[in-house]
Length: 407
Image (cartoon, rainbow, N blue to C red; front, side, top):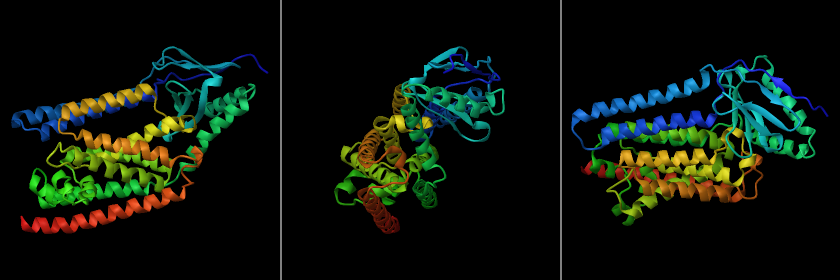
């Protein structure tokens, strides 16, 4: 066995941690959308609306610039070194070395495409080491590095077990690649369709029309109009409300549906939406509530549950550290404080349903088999949830037509 270290030179492009980039973008989105929603939803003089909206837009622009700088900003060149005991690479700042024992590396693989293709080395604990492939001085540098890393790990007494653990994560990524997220597309289409109907019927800013179209009003729900638990998910209070929810739904939904498979994802998303709407109705906090954020928060809970039950088998880009999870909770709390009209009970209900459903629906299945293997009860549950949503939407449309004709 070789004792000398093998070095791979980097060109000097900044090597930032993926968590840092995501944190900067999400913080900008939280502040921007929170301030923007406050500007358009809260009652205040018209002279205050434009400045607050501008601040929100500037926050969004700043978050985009933060991401671009984190990927493209040049920095000091630091090479990657592999010896029989550890890997030495750039730290989070990219300005000093970080030491990773080979036995503590959970997986190493290439992810992304084109200019965003990157090498992701995920330790069992702590943030991943993310290196853009264009940072390597040699054209075949990333592939040569992975081959050398696997060779070094294979020499270890526990090398075969370590490589099997890596392959499980790669197997999950391979099984989910190329799968079309049909359910996510249907949910986004229904949300856009509902908002188009609101614009056509003049329901924005009109509580009476919003309730007539199927808003989640606790009084009506408790009187037996249970279809509102479905229809309220596809109505929104304004453009910013719709945009923030669709951004999260597309981002998390398209990834999670590929990882879980469509039936399991449908069950998680559907039960999250129903549970969140029911929790909101029982809390009696709002005159009415609307929005697909119940499902979005259920997907966040689903992602957290996957990191809890099978973190080591997750593809490295799907892992969430404790620090990032706490940051997300802090940003969500900030959004609640700034926006003031967010339905916290609906969000918590949806998130809790997402966690519980995910833990139950993934039991007894090898993590890398989740995209292609579905338990019979999960498939039947997904069909039932789909039927409930179909019947609820049909009943809601008929009831809305009758109610709006009477206004």
